[in-house]
Image (cartoon, rainbow, N blue to C red; front, side, top):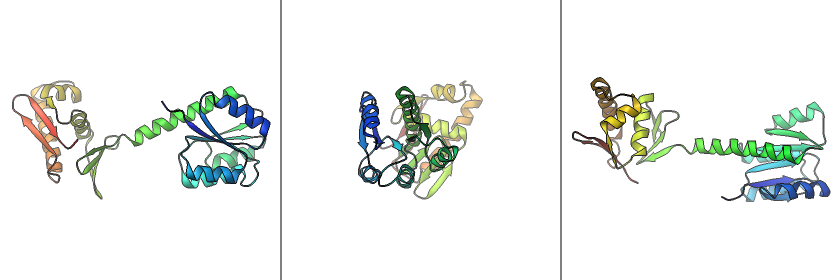
Length: 228
């Protein structure tokens, strides 16, 4: 697995060396002592997290964080500063920083915070990437939404669960009892009739895309046929 890339901005050479040396055991660290240079690098490279001092030559840490937030509203930002005033901490957090550590800080605490924010960021990306493309449609199971172009069709929770199950088994036969037990916990007759209604509604929606169809496999189940 590739190492996470951290933008570290600190103009104190001794502190920068010690912090970089420790962080580089875990991450790829790109260090700058100047805020303007750091921002130029941010615009040209992909980083996973930013660690910023506040008192910097060129663009200070507050301005740097604001500029970074203009380009990326989600990247985690941690301030490291000798500024201990509550007003400075509040200003930093209002600018969109995720945390504010006061110098002197422990490397262990910094690494712990970095790990927390990297994991949170990864989960957020995973959630964002949880949509599924099926033909001309984009399916968002978390929000029960099926979008085609500018049109969004809202599904019921059960319809969304059914479509998600079909997509997970795309182009393979799903037995009726497997669908019923997965979604209803039972394969009795009345639940089967409800399932047929939901499948009919999905078929009606997918009529707009000839590359998608839900095939009935007699006495066995169904198959969602769609482009890979």
